[in-house]
Length: 131
Image (cartoon, rainbow, N blue to C red; front, side):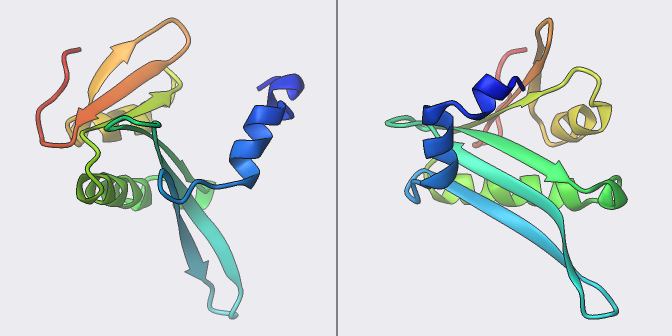
């Protein structure tokens, strides 16, 4: 992401001032044997204003890749969204991020490929959206 986009005033407002009615974040913390703690993964769900749609994002630390944490976080987001009345969940994925693409597909997301990203969409009520 370009520096000018990262420091854009509107983006910084969203990062600093959460709208607790529309946005939530889940943080997976690992408690190490030495008592230290580390973030293993983070997932967020941002509901669009005056809409029944939400966008998800999931990030999992390198040492936790392929161990089911991303699946668990995304499933929790879907369940929370369902309870909050969200009807459709969408995420933007890089086309070469095959692990996330496979995960979304295995959870029933429809995948629409664009030139520089893949849009993953899931109807919360279990019906896939058209590809």
